[in-house]
Image 1 (spheres, rainbow, N blue to C red):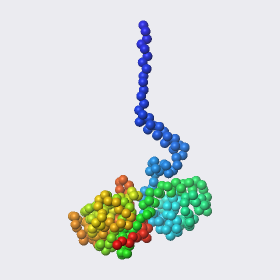
Image 2 (cartoon, rainbow, N blue to C red):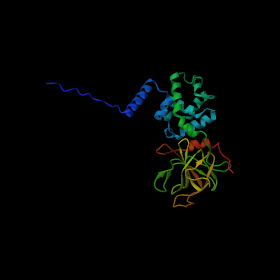
Image 3 (tube, rainbow, N blue to C red):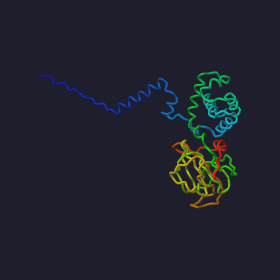
Length: 291
């Protein structure tokens, strides 16, 4: 009797799966060794959204930062680094921090400016990390103009979230800037026209996607500028339409309310409505003259 020959088994490696495994292992090792925070944000998207902040807190950061000559994001970063609760975020507290940070130009100076406030290297590291997580909101805040052209009278207040009844019980998802019919409306930023046309609630409206990822909504227009069409690129300060009173009915309906621009901002893939009021208050100093 002879023993049957031993059969050698051959194994093949799935190259794609092998490469993916190596990459994942490399990422895990990098995380264990301490991945730089900016790399982690790029990979995992750990940025703050506008909706992560109460509008009244953003308004305080923006306003006090402007008054004290301190970039607002340093004030917000200090609060985040210290884990301050919403109830403890006050104008008085923010003002005290702003005084310490007057004259700061970059995050490398944090230790120099905050030493009298809190001498703690781990705290400085946390502040720098929080500054990075605020980058997306900074992009929304910066390089914008007010949507109403320079030289025209207007008025507005914070009506975001107010109750509305037309079309069913709902809340107001923007800010109404009251002004005369025919006043030029300009794009607050560079972007692409994603939506143009009639909506029952918004009348003649435009939806522009900014480079910052925000969907900017302009509603109740009387007409569009002749250069505007769906898919066209627009520049910051470019006239896109004119204030009107269209909406709340079938196409062409006007006169159901006083003329105004309804201005909205929507964030993220889900396009969550965020309150434009704190941003408008800052952009108000950046008006564009049009012909």
